[in-house]
Amino acid sequence: MDTPSLRALGRYPRPVDPGTMKFTSPLDEIVALRNSCRSYDGLPLGDPERGELMDFIAALPAGPFGSAGRLEILDLDEFKSGAHKLGTYGVIRGAVTFIAGSAVPDEKGFVDFGFRLEAVILRATDLGLGTCWLGGTLTRDAFAAAVGAPEGEIVPAITPVGRYAGKRTIADRLIRWSAGSRNRKPWQELFFDRDFSRPLAPESGGAFSFALETVRRAPSASNKQPWRIVLGAGGREAHLLLQRSRGYNKLIRAADLQLVDMGIAMCHFELAMREQGVAGAWSRTGTDPCPLPERTGYIASWRSDA
Image (cartoon, rainbow, N blue to C red; front, top):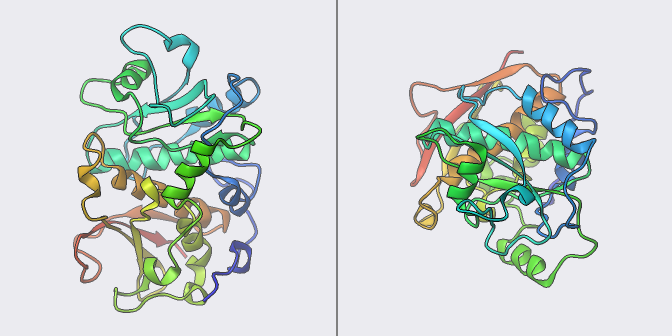
């Protein structure tokens, strides 16, 4: 079955003030434009974009689980030598400005970090800038020192930020191909009605259709798309679950990137609901919302107020 466009899924008028995370373009356009940029023009991020991003970061709320961590804009020129030289192991070319942050390395810390950095990445896309989630190919300790990570916090991931180079390199195209960056799982593999025995079709998402499609198009580590969402029976709840990719957490032990992915999914979902003018919030139930498949765990539930 063909997946309908975001605009065909019942978008609502955009509110004047969607909260502290403000964008100048509609969310569906930003999500469609965002991609993993690995080749940059070699110039530092200048004003007014730097100022816009700094203001956005300063206004960011805590993540859904209540932690904020820290996010900083870093210039490579300041860290070219010494014990804390920033690097990305050659997968990024021409980037001289990065956004990095730190978080407590537990479930809430990773999820909140993913939520907040993805919001900044979407704002950077809104400003016409390139970004790329990097969770495995970075000098993690060097970035931790650069952001002033407190004791007990780590840098789960970073992103370069800047202007696109004129042409993608061969390495860029190969990485994008190997990660399957253009491929997204169909609705029936990701979204369900009441339990996992009822796959959800795009036309059956109701008031959540726009938010679900926005999540489907979100970035994830190695494009594993580990999120699953089960809609509640009353039409007012959406339960987010993590279906872990077999063996993936053994590849990168320093940070649980699939929990970071859950924060990214929550960011896309919440922003979509806000843009539709639907009030609600994330919370956690005392028990699993339904019987869960193997390697699947409950993360949180969105409950609409109306």
